[in-house]
Image (cartoon, rainbow, N blue to C red; front, side, top):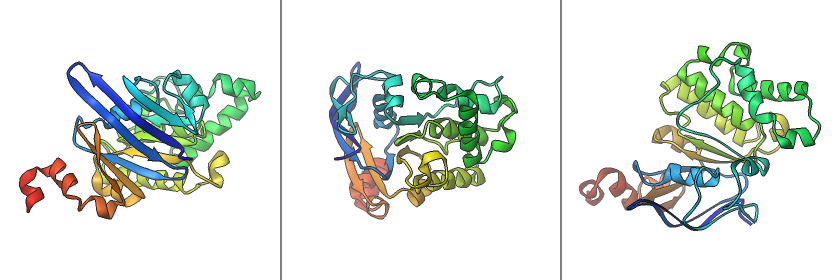
Length: 255
């Protein structure tokens, strides 16, 4: 059974069809890149999974359960966490508090976790992404690159089974991109963080920096106009004529 499935999912905004009978699967332990031209429907898919949006038709299935009608906090409790393009930290709170806030949830209370335990989990996440030395600084003190790492720390602190990343490398310089990309790869490979020391989460990652993306993912799904046009290993996808046409136009595809 696949970890995540989209079954004939369609979403329309007015006259714009963002996704059209969209199908895809993601298995446990996969690190998958999701790419496509601007407006292809990539972020729409992540918003459907995290329940920011609801599909007009079709279903989203996670671990065999139809999650299409669940609420956002139900999704987190089932083991899905994500980051988005625009970072929105609590700028006047300490960095560690930014990571702790999402952990103070019904799931944590039911399991009897105390503040100290949550604080340790937040610190572990900050250490994993490399900014634990700034834990007590206000989030407003962080650079754009470190804000991106804070977003990843907030997501992984809940120890998700599925991690969704929407352009985590966007706006970063090459050195920052390399550091964050290595953290994502290490997490996926079972890097030592909480219970993830033996098996990391599955990762679905949108990224426009194709060189960096291709170097860390195992599989790439390409969508255009809300439909899948390619799905396979990075080396195969970059040579696919449909992908070349979607990014560069007919003239380059025919060359």
